[in-house]
Length: 267
Image 1 (cartoon, one colour):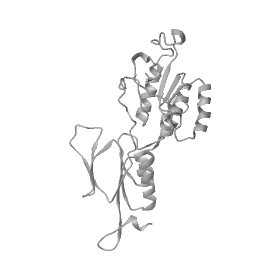
Image 2 (image 1 turned 45 degrees about the vertical axis):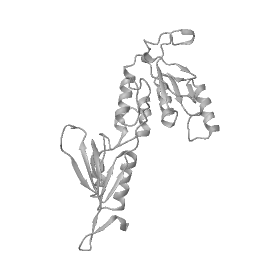
Image 3 (image 1 turned 90 degrees about the horizontal axis):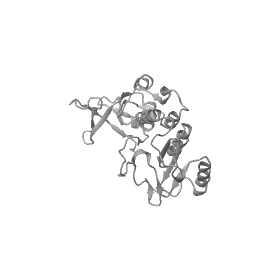
Image 4 (image 1 turned 135 degrees about the horizontal axis):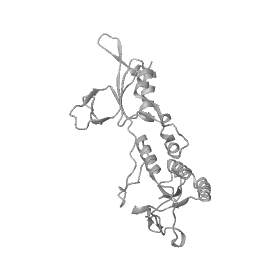
């Protein structure tokens, strides 16, 4: 056992340190598991905003597309399983509102009862912040319209599935949007961003019967990938029928799926 995970008391014996982790899923839950392996006596408290402490984020596009059919497979660990296996105190639906580094305390509230004045206060010897990131929401006109989604957690995944299942097999408002002004009654989806998750969503929405447009502001898809490799993937997805727009951005979200692409951006 590493000495940094030991805390000598006045009698010269050791006691477990108090570790507070803000955030679960890949970062926070993995940190908690590693900390337990380093010290069997540590007091580990994991605070997670939202109801899911650990879930298969990489599988979310595939649940939306129907390749994963069991919703329960998306939950990797639960508060109960982490307590039983690793003796970790997990509090879900708990949002940390204050950190006092001088007194080494945190304050949190119960998200399920936002009107309550009750708070949770906990002390710590070590604090880990693993809250992840929020999807960027640019100030584009119409961005708050119904039917626009981010994909970061299981609740957003469920919302996308629910929305898709409400859409009829043929679009009833897509008149005059086809070639030469003809009616185009196919279902359409637009994906903003051509990173790994964006392309996974492209594949899975096509599996659900959508015509897909992918819009990427960078001059290529898959930003971290070499230009030559990205070009191979671009040719392949265009060959599969995807409307790919690179080096351009979205100007606005118009009602009734009125989707247009021009030199000034996608609207």
